[in-house]
Image: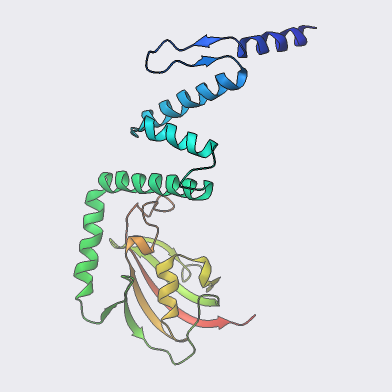
Length: 230
């Protein structure tokens, strides 16, 4: 009985009549759905406001109205994608402002490194230097390879090395960071290269493992031993 009483009380609370007294917007909240709709408007506005996002209320209301009449100029997929891309771009701008000195340092390194003897630059911005040129086949993005490598930050801090483990690493090129994958695809089997990865071809704004900072370039010395046949 107590449970039933609580349910009745809750329903009564949800369906009470509530009038918005504003002259600009007179809305009666009679049903639970009315109250839910109003609550969603308040909650969404306050949520985005707390994140310093400016909401054009007229445009917001028009979007809701057009969608309810199946007249929206964006479908649900396009709208969701727009919101996601906007939020990601906004977050990137905030991160770039926070890490401006790190970004300037990273870009400066790549600019200086690009003019050093033997260093070549690909259209993506990857830089590499040939230590030993092999004569074997070059792998594709779907190949699995066997390599020895050492990875360091530009200040010389080592974060990974198959040499230290005394065992070559095997992985599919489609499953590693862009710059590493692109660099290995340049190598004939038997080659040894040094890769200089700009941060956008490495771990970007995220960083990794507490060692690689956001917007940090990476250096890899890589020996391509073989393409693993499956």
